[in-house]
Length: 174
Length: 392
Image 1: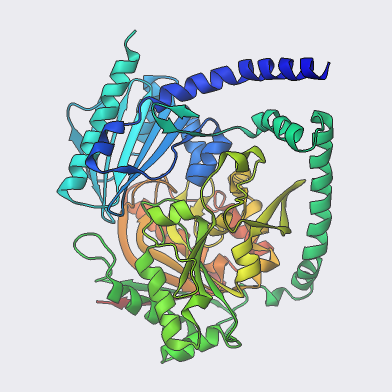
Image 2: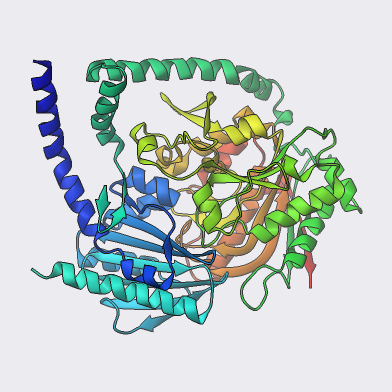
C-alpha cells in the first residue's frame, strides 16, 4: 500500500511538473551558446523566474513592474570574459504587444536605432561605462548589457543579440 | 535539469513550494502534508515569540527615549538633522568612470561638513568615538542593479579614509550586500580572507533548494540569522543578515540615488531590504510600513552611525532597474537616514521636473514619513539643515 502511494505520488508529480518544464525548455533554447566560442564563459547556471516572487529574488523591486507589463517568464544568464560581465535578460510575455510595452517603458536616454535586429531594436552607450542593446521580437523582450565600453564589447553584444533573434525566429517556425 | 546543454535553476512560486516540500519532508522526516504545515505554523509561532523577546528591549528604549533613535543627530549636536551634499565636478571621467581621487576628496569633504571638523581624523573620531580595536565596521552597499550600484571607487574611498584616520585593522572593515553574484557584477572582488578589507555577500547566489523553503538561506554562504528576526508583516518574519547581526559592531549605510517604481525612492531606508532574507515579500502598499519596520530593528537602528549616498549617477525614472539616467557627480551624507532620504527625493524630483515628468510624491514615498513616525529621523524640512559644497 505504501509503495502504491509512492508510485501514485510520482506519477501525479510528473504530470503537475510537466507544463512547467515544457515552458522552461522553450526559454532555455534561446540562450546563445555560440558566444562561448569567443571566450565568454557562463558564470553560473542560468536562472529562470516564473512569477513575481521568484522574479523579485533576481531583480528585486523592479519585478512587479515587469509582471504588470505582461511578463510570464524571464531568464537571466551572465557570461564573463576577462573579468567583464555580459548580462543577458530575456522576458517572455503573452504577446508581441506586451513585449513592445516593456521595450517602450524602459526607454533609455540617448539610444540609437539598430537595424536588422528583432522588430525594433536600440543600442545605448550608457552612463557609467555600460553598453546595452535591447529589442523585442514576437513575445520576447531581450536586453543585453556589458559593463565595459570597447569595440570588442560592442561586437559581442550585437552578436549575442543576433544569435538570440535567430533562435526566436527558428523556434517560431512550425 | 539540463536543457540545451545548460544546467538550469528554476525559481518557483511560493504557492508551488508545498509540492516540493512534501518531497523533502518525505525524505527527511517521513511526515505528510498535514504534519509539514503544522511544522511551519509552529515555527512561525516560535519566531514571533523570539522576535518579541529579542526586540522588546529595543522597542521600549525607542518609546521611552525617542531622541536616542538614529535620526536624532549622533554626529551633530544641534537640533536639526544635517544633510550634506558634496558635488565634485571631476568625479566622473570622460569614460564615464568614477575618478578615485575625486571620490576620496568628496568623501572627506562630506564628513568634514557633516561633523563641522577641520581634520578628517577628528571627523571619523566624532562618528566613532568609542571604537575598539576588535570592533568591525560594515559598509552596507547596494548592488541590486549592477548597472547603477554603489560604486567600488566610492566605497573603497570611505574605507581608505577610515583606515587612514582610525586605528582600525582593514580586515575589520566589511563591504557587504545581499549576494556575492550581485557584488561581482557590480565590480567588487570578494575577499573572505583574513587580510585586507573584506567583501562579503549574505548568500552566494540564488539556489533552488533555498527557494524551496521560500527564503534564500544559503547553506554554503554566510546566510541569515534565525535568532534575529523582525515581524515585518503580521505572521511574516524576516531574518537579518548574519553579517549585520554577528559580524558588524557598527554600520555605514552606502545606498545609491534611485527612484523606485513601488516605493517612490530607494535610498538608505530601502537599502536594508538587502539586509533581510525575504525582501520580495514586502513590496505591497508602496513597501509601507515594511521599510520603516525593518529599519527600526535594533540591529540596524543602533549600529548605524553614518549614511553616505553614492549620487555619482542617478536613476530618476523607472527605477530601480535600468541604466543611470543622469550624472549627478555628488555624495550625500548624514547621520539621519530619514532626512537623507527626504533630501534625496527632492534631488530626484528636480531631475523629473527638468524632464517634464511627474515628481515622486510623499504619498508614494510614504515609508519616509512612517520612518519619521517611528522615531528613525525627520522628514520635516524645517528640521533638516542642508549644507552644500562644490569641488571643481
